[in-house]
Structures are given as structure tokens and as C-alpha cells.
Image (cartoon, rainbow, N blue to C red; front, top):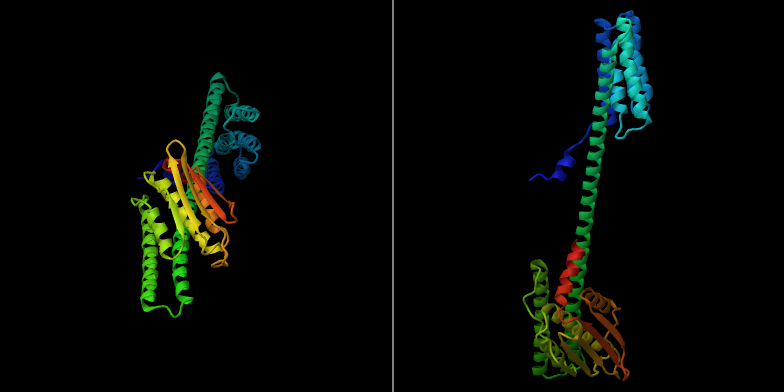
Length: 383
């Protein structure tokens, strides 16, 4: 289906040079006819010279319309060729009434009357009326054409601007989606790879461990890797489908860290929270546990989740001070920055600061139903 915008794009008006060439060619043809017929009682040399001069002047109709119209009026009186006069009047008529319009009208009437005077030796009231009517008709036609051209150009410009804005919104939506994918991938991979590293580190520092323990740790590594792949597939599926039917299991997340030998205490759960709120809370706990292991390996961690529709949701991850060196490099603040952005988009806040006992405290606050705010922001980002 062809839309109005598409139709506007397909309207390609001829360029000014093409119109100028056609105008000159038509006037030249009329000059030849005026010489052969002839159209004026004057000698053919005068008819030809006047026609050729006026024909050459037509090329400059857009730059000097009044001068071209005056030359055309004189040529019409001398040669009987009305082409240059008509083209001058038509081209000079703009979209507004102004002194130039009045000058063109006066020159046009004078040119038509001068031709009547040269051809018949005088003119009467009928000639005056016909000259006025002819001049008015040409000027009105020229003004209408100029107005239509201006309107079409404005509509085409608006269509092109709307297309550019739509393209910009599409690019912004794509960038936002890529950022969302990156945050999801970081959350999943940072958590799972940390667990795998933790299990592998346990085997590395105990090379003489019993085969049963080696088998158990290897099974945990394999299971954790499979879970990472499953979560990555789920993220891709959610991004394609646009919704998530699953519900994050906070207890399972904490249990995975306990199985890796970490002392993690959980108070509360996601319970009946809306899915968007629960997912954000889950990601905060995931980021907090990963950072606690990275910066305070072996330190006890306490996870608390409280909330109600009236008070909103508060999630805290607090780790005590660790006496062991950090488990790995800091990795920058990419995860925390992404988490702060995630919470900001759904109307929440994230605070990260040292705890009272020398450890670290990560706290997030969310409205109870973040899905409404999340949908609104996605619609705003998509235009």
C-alpha cells in the first residue's frame, strides 16, 4: 500500500535548468512562427530581433522577473510573440501580494495594450478589459503554481524529517535493547562464572582431595555451567518474545552460593511481588553476592528482602569484613552501574557504601509494582 508520504517522495519536480531550457525553446519556436506568418506589421528583421532578445531574456526569469517581463512586453508589441511576456508574468507571480506583483500587473497590461496599439493603431475599452483579464489570469495561475510548489516542498521536507526522526528512534531503541542485553548477560555470566571459579579454586587448593569430593565439585561446575547456558537461552528468548513467563527463585540463588561453601543468610523472599519488581530484586542480590565474593571472599553475607504494596520493596546485601585477600580483580563498576540504571528506569534507587562492621552494604529500593513504570519507559524510549 502506497502511503501519502511515499507518494510525496516519488514526486520529483523538474529542475530549474530543465524548465528554463523548455521555456527558451518554446519562445524560440514562437519567434520562428512570428517571423514566418508574420504576427506583427513591422519588418521581419525587427520581429526576429525582438523575439530573439526576449527569448534570451527568458533564461533569467527567476532572477530578474520584472526586467524579463518588461522585455517580453516590448517584444510582444514589436513581434506579436506573447511567449516571453506570459512566461515573465507567470514566473514573477509569487505566493504573496507585494509591490513586485503590482509592477508585474502594470507591465502586463501595458504590454498587451502596446501590442494592440502597434497592430491596430489604438485600443479601446474592450482591449483594456481583455488586457487586464489576461494579465490577471496569468498572474493568478503563476501564484497558484508557486503556492502549490511551496506547499509540496514543505510537505516533502516534513516527510523527510519525520523519516529521519523515525530512523533515529529506531536506532535509539536498538541501542537501548543492546544495553539491556549487555546488562542481562553481565548479570548471568558474572554470577555463574564466579561460582565456577569458586568451585574450581576449591579443587586447586586441595590437590589431594578425595575422589568423591573431586567428583562432587566437578558435578557442581558442570551443573553451574549448564545453568548459565540455560539462563542465557532464556534471556535471548525473553528478548525475542518481549515477555518473561518465569519467576526468579531467590532461594535457589542463595542455595547455589551455600553449596559453594559461602555463609549466606536469607531473610524474606520475593513472595507475591510483581514479576518486574522480583526480577530487579533478584538481580541486585545476584550482583551483591558476586561482589561480596570478589571483594570479601569467605565473609558471611546477609540478604534481606522486605516489602509491601504500601511501602515498596527494600533489598539489602550486607557482607562482613573479610580477613582473606580478594578472590579476584575488581572488574570495575560495570555491574553496579548497570544495576543502578536498571533500578532508575523502573523508579528505584541503589546505594552502595561501607557497612558498620567494616564490610559492605548494597541496598536497593523499588516501588511495589515496577512493571507499570517499566512499560512506560520502554514506550517512551521507543517513541
